[in-house]
Structure formats: structure tokens, C-alpha cells
Amino acid sequence: MEERVIIVEGKTDRERLLQVLAEPVLIYCTYGSYSADKAGRLAEKLETADEVYVFTDEDHSGKKLRRQLSDDFPHAQHLHTRRMFAQVANTPLDVLAEILERAGFQVQDRQRDPEVWPDGDKKRPQGQ
Image (cartoon, one colour):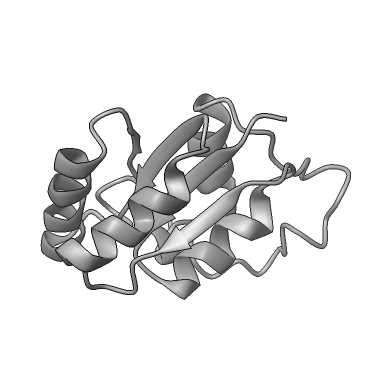
């Protein structure tokens, strides 16, 4: 079985992605910090992964973490939220689904499972 991994910054990012993913994916959180020690532990966990993705925020700390992860995991593919949302956790579910689907992930079908896509998703800015 193919093992896919997504590295995110925080627990809220992880929870948000789990709301839209329709396949088993390992999601590792850096919890906003990254060190040589953490890189070593993460490298051990990723040894068996077939595909590694980095999905960090589009702010200063997220971009810094992305650069560090790029150095340590040059084979990783990068996912980006739209700049207007700035953070993965602030990205509307349908936009996250679109980003993940473009990367080849299976996502929940909004039509089949309305519980996953609450009408009151407050993450989408007005006019979007």
C-alpha cells in the first residue's frame, strides 16, 4: 500500500485537512518549531513514505519552515494555499479540497457528504 505523508505546521491545520481527505494519509505537525533534532526524528518517520508533501502557511514563519523542510526533504512536493487566506487553517474546505485534489489526493464529495461541508463554513471571505 502506498504511504503518503503531509507535513503541516499545527494541529488545526491537520484537523482541517482531515475534514476533506477521503483516503488514509499520515499528517505530521511541526508545531511551529523545527530543529536538527526534530528533522532527524521526522526523517526516520518518512523513510517508508512513498510521497511526501509540505503544506505550510503563506506567512513568514510558514515560508521559513517550508525552506527548512525543502533543504531536509528535497524530494517533497509543495502544496500552497492562496495568499488571501494566509493560513492552511483559514482556508475554506472547498479550496483545500481543490488543492489536495490537484495533487492527486482523494477528497470527500461535497454532494454525498454534506456534514463534511457545513453551509456555515466561516473560513471563506465575502465575495469568494
